[in-house]
Image (cartoon, rainbow, N blue to C red; front, side, top):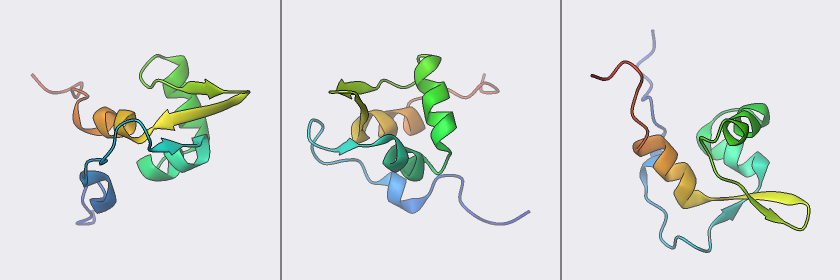
Length: 77
């Protein structure tokens, strides 16, 4: 087992302006270190909000940050 942190350092910094940090699906997947399929799955399950601009999905960086730090863990009691 490695000593890698569970949350990457770049994700620990809170986004500065809530309404201007828009990410594409690919950028959101990179930010969360997951796959594009997982991002789409989280949207489908209602865990992550996506915004439509024309026919493109966009994500607020603040929403991704909140997903990391404000989601209760299943095993937490």
